Length: 199
Image (cartoon, rainbow, N blue to C red):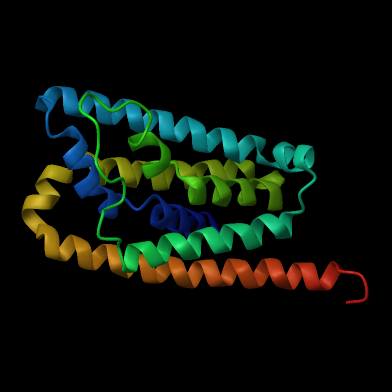
């Protein structure tokens, strides 16, 4: 996997366009200057969490006695479910009713930006090719930077594109994510079948 393809995969997983309506609803009651401060804080927290999983994922796998192909299969299943939810969003919305007040860590940083699928993806990258951690860090920074730029311009994008176009783009990203998840599942299954006893 190249840096560009890894960055694209992570960008699809972070799903900035799909998060725009949720972020706008969470920040609606805050002054515009405070909205940017909160958004910057949440994005930095999400980046720190993803970096932690990228660099420490290999050791976490060893600690839990998990094989890499099991994480690949599990990650593919999680990505598949996320992609299906992007294509066919539930009527109650992603987070349901939200309490009043300023959001902190949950739900903006985790799980909207640094969700289970993103954590699984960076952990898989770091454990599969630990010698390329610098490449995966760069890919994560590129995906995170593009996500942050889109979310910081969310108000303008929402007015310019409109709800209908954003929904269509999110569903297209969901279809791409489903295809990627199936490939992850097949790769993990193929690796397992090659090393399984009697294979």
